Image 1 (tube, rainbow, N blue to C red):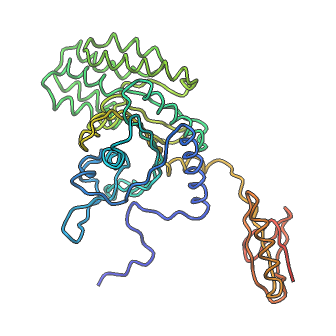
Image 2 (cartoon, rainbow, N blue to C red):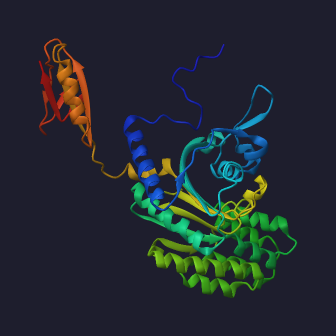
Image 3 (cartoon, one colour):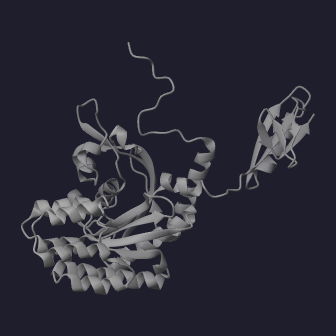
Amino acid sequence: MSKPKVFEKPTGVKDYLPEAVAKLRTIETNVLQCMERWGYREIMTPTLEFYDTVGVASSTEDRKLFKLLDRNGTTLVMRSDITAPIARVVASLLKEEAFPIRLSYHANVFRAFEAEAGRDAEFFQTGVELVGDASSESDAEVIALAIASLQAAGVKEFKIALGHVGFLTGLFDETLNNRSEAQQALKECLLNRDYVGYRDTIRSLDLAPEVQKELEGILRLRGGQEICDQAKQVTKDPTAQQSITHLCEVWDVLKAYGVSEHVLIDLTMIGDFSYYTGMTFEGYAADLGFPVCSGGRYDNLLTQFGRPAPATGFALKTNRILEVVSKQPTQAPERLLITYTAASRAEAFAKAKELRSGEGVMVETRLTPDGKIEAVRSGDASFRVNGVTYKDIIQLG
């Protein structure tokens, strides 16, 4: 008989203690308020969805989905992202609403990873979807909003890497025509940021020296607006050229927003190439190796739900942002304690109600025989009771 699991948790999930939860809620609230000011309305979708619809349509690999059967034997999935459920809602409950539609969300999502990968199986996302607008203006809007949202979340230093799947698709079609396996291998290397593997794969393909040089050259296509002009010289493929033109237009709009200093063009940045159809981007905070946000254009998803429409959006990785802001000093709320006797109960509760109406204050109440309590005075004029620090103690006898 196996030992009962009393304190253990499944791999990839965690408990969040009060201090961490307070910070998570602050991030969530500030970001959603920021999104609302930009015209995005919050939506909530269920934790469980049908595998045959939302599960299949999501950007998550099938092996990374949490699946279960209902009592009728129908396969369900725990949501692995919010974009596919929102696409379902836009095509059904909001089918009479005119485009463009702007929606925001905050929710936990679930993905099954190998135990040794050390990655979270449950994590939090806060994001937006802009549906029904195919323009470079809409792509720039979600990037600018992602920047504003990161700032609202308390992330002070970050960079947004901006790419376009069409550039690489066009380049690979031009240089590796009818070699789909080679294209896939190179895309996998770029997706995993394995630049050594990317070079090794190119050298194993027996390509002409000029083609090999062209493919290796894209690793240098990272920087500011000048990258647009450089990229146009790399390939004459129409798809790649059109993609670069689109990125140039997005950059111009970002300059008008006044946020281009936070953005760099990175044409090796491909995102999930099975999902995104155009512009993609990722946000990186200083001293954190994982992206704190990601997004892009996915114009094919709504078709799967019967309402074809272009769409773009992004998601903040809220629990990763928690790692960033947890390193920053925070102002804890003032913690107050009111002690009272049975006779002074009404007075104590009225006083607590008055104090709780202010911001940045936590008020606890405690019944004692004489309205008093033993406390240790600290050097900073605070009090400690049973290991808990209070800014002040009000005793009502």
